Image (cartoon, rainbow, N blue to C red):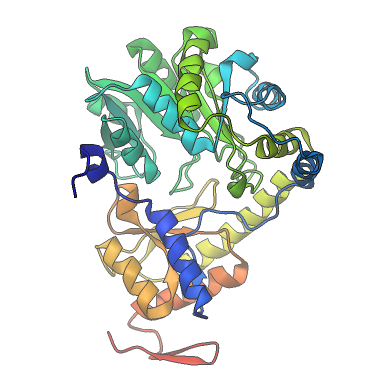
Length: 405
């Protein structure tokens, strides 16, 4: 079979594949603990459900404008004013079928073949593949000090004449680390000086712990949005636990938004009106669900860190937000893919290999599940890896005997 260069180069989404694997195993009755999923367990806001139900009951479900319905664009304008303290117009906004599509359409609108896109490692698994889909070149940059905190010098080190864009995701998936205000200020200034597009993937910006506050990139932009190459991405999936609604957006200069709209109009047209109205309900509705989700995730993260800190040989950096811990298991196995499949096979715990995020020897563990999932999941991993653990483990009524150490 003959495939295109892009068709051969782009790999499947590992995280979506793991979700599929978990569903298959659970359907077979296997006692799976999913520590790989990036999906909050809380319910979608009532305001979102009421808005969607009202649209469905009306029976008036039609095509929508390619860039989103006016009500949603106005809600995003309001959101940007409230959260970022920056006034934008509806012409600066495009609503897409998820933040992933918003990023994808932005990349398609700005990249030519062989252009380069820089992003710090560890990074979201889709960034390299999305860049490849545009025929461009992904350029991950690992912080020189070995931490999860990039510096502007790290960025400058890999930036050249082919660099078209930089992607910053803070707080970061998979590390949970929030980048410093100084770094955000410096990268905004650097991109403006070099006339490079800066894509701020802010999908987790409200899921922060210990009283931390999101850093608005607009604070450091000394010009109007329409004069800048700053693109801010967000959506309802994470903060409102509305992953299945697939509504995200981008805020950028009008010329770019128009180009993105043209592209999206030929890809998917506008997102479903039912789901857009649900997003309007969530954004304009009561926000206590976001605070409650933050408290739950902060508590879950505390429990996971306690479990990991008692696990000899592993190293975990305290997350500032999101619902992930990025954990160094290289003491036990440096091949993260091999380790991830080993844990799935032996103790039915799903994790995501660190190599998918650009760093080998790590596993991404999710704190989206229950406290029971977290404690039992880490207990199973420890039993499988730690030679000082007992030789037997009971999972329900099933007895496992360790025969590989």
